[in-house]
Image (cartoon, rainbow, N blue to C red):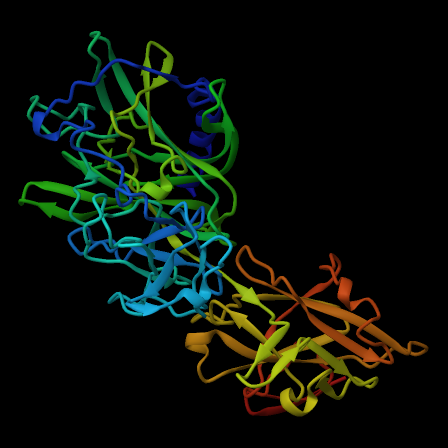
Length: 566
């Protein structure tokens, strides 16, 4: 409880004292930077954004798409895997200035998925296959062929030479590290050292930082204090649920010790007077990192430690205990880290260069510097972004309105009809094929390992229960069948309609399950269904488990005992 009180006080101080002075008008300090270690010089000769093949053969991925780093251990292989949201139609944009292109997947023709008018390629349907801890469950990304030239995301470096990796994966799994940073193997684009001299440095030969606490001396002789860093990101391609936010750091000692606490605000994005995107004053979320949130990821040459620093959103549970709380990113945002120059902080945040398709989309991270109460920022010779990852997942839920078995098409298959007495349920259009069910797709299991519901059902109050049966291949497809129970029609009512929307983490099914009862037809308003605001949430129960909702009336078998609810 004491920690929570201290945390609240610190938040108040941050809002009133810290970056209220910085606002959104960060003035660029234009002086050339003089790196403290010549072999780590960061300039245009050694660091370049990744480029496409020299003749312009390439394609771009959707705006806001992330990459996947398979684990937190920096000594392991950090794969460049494109993280595809489950059930998401990924369109790769043809950037070859011609539509006379072809597409292949691992050498096989893929051009049937190309739009002939644009040359763009729609990537195939993924289901919800996840990446496991060994990096399995991956798909090949497509290759675009333009005459004798070709380009494959992640597999081709800035000179058109082959790289070691290039895959895509669905990621509804919160154990993976999702990052905007792109790890192009063999190009040395991962940086821990720069021009900021930490206070812990004893000599000029000690390690320096890209971003972090310390001082920066410019060629005009001015020495500024490094106090923070800000990074603007585009909106994720679909809502991203984040459990923890990871930053990779270098430290001469230990990133945080004693009472040192780092704060990270997730803020809105505005344009400054120069038309550049920067952080605004609106704070969406505030995250915190304590000393216990720092762990060694990798030790280099038995002397240098690279660290993981995990930032969390904190809240109190029902017992007043501080816990980590997930949050959702669904719009353009900025990360703003402050309080770096406090006692006990020695965290040198690391940097990455960006792939060419993100150039101009992901802006460079701005080190925030201070001198006599004035704030500014500076730029490295080449743009470098913050090396951070989002430990979280893309959620997805869908109620298909059209299905096929390869021979027959089943349109408008998401409609259930309930008898007037509420006892019989059938699929409105395909009772002989679907029985009393409709289909729904989920990126995650309906119930987690702790028996908590991952999804809610926004349903009319006269729908008394929703039941599911998991299909045999649902671990791959995410497909379930659903049915319902309902109350009898009220006296004097001959028919009614309702709609059941399914809600996950930051997502709601685009189409509902339509429910008809009595003498109504599909044309009685269902085509204009909207999410109701006064509907109650309905839990889903397993059909095979002989369980029903709490407000079900009738004979119920629960834990082997028969109960009668009236």
